[in-house]
Image: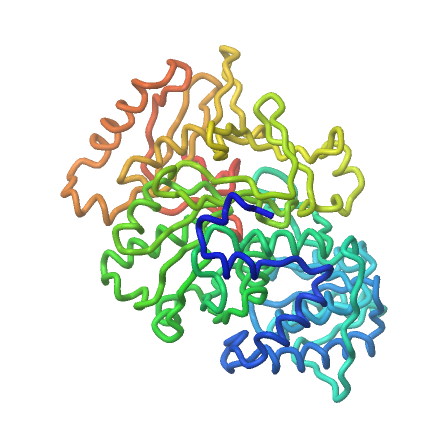
Length: 500
């Protein structure tokens, strides 16, 4: 499988990327193979063997609180050892876990737990207030502190590959968030896909900064780390990221573009050494990756690899092992997936796709002919590399009747060296506005005194290559960041993101 990625590693490493029938089988094999390796660092150091003992005890805790294979539990924890332990205990016990973002308020927690019919909610004690309404109004849902343990060990349960494993919520950047149901088969396919295209992938060191309730953090950071016998250091506060880097010395990091941009700016101020001596690779996704980042990280000896994925696809659809040669591409589509492009939109089906949304009405518009309609506009070049050109829901229809893809334009304008991030939108259906977040470190390096004139000159160069209806006629320079989702994507259509 994925023979096209074979050239990017050695034969021995590639042969170790093997399929498992369910997460319990994978976990048992990893414990047997890597038992003495460090698995998680979160205040304490936990080996695979120690984590396995704690997971077995927590399966007992779940059982004592009414959870049985096939029942549903919620996990409401920040990134922590407690989250990892609870998640592994649930999925290796045949209990699907609803991963609840910690920014949810207490009424939403109550609503989700009640609507989904959860047997229990595992929560971090720091989030006690978030479960107060649930405790009062639905006492039938057991509330389990993530620090709970038991003396007895409950064995894991192997389940069919199609068994539900987790429900994750979509990002909701342009609309409501939806719950996507992911099976063991889907999660393991996404986990394996995370291994391809990297020369050294087994027994690495990861620093976790993305939320584990987000599919990118769960699949590519946690699951691929565990699959490869790697160690994962949990960064509790992103402000401490570089302090933790100095302590743990990661070899791989998984970042969204906004964090990669911030880190690049800081490394320019304080030097390459702030990354530590061992960092070789950054996996970057969950939002469009500016080609600028690929090129600039290469200059400091770090390979930044863009990719593309969705919550609905267990994260990983494609990965780009040729980022320097094709920095605007999100890479090659992984095997095990069927796809077609309909009127520019990417449609997918395959082993890593979700089993549908929790709410039936959300599925009606999501599928056609058995394919999931991603809403992403794409093209594929002659070598099979995928490019995202826009979002169907974000298409701007001008009063002239012309259609404009803002995402496709944003990729072009983010190629300007002083633009860190940007947003394109229409004003009164007649003209296009470009709102930018400047890359101030680069502005200072170039000694630019009149930033607006510099940006306008660069925008005019790009405008000259575009048809008249796609040309930018107004530029706004922000002095604060865009409003972002918990996954650090720009949240479109919010008042805070449009300065008129």
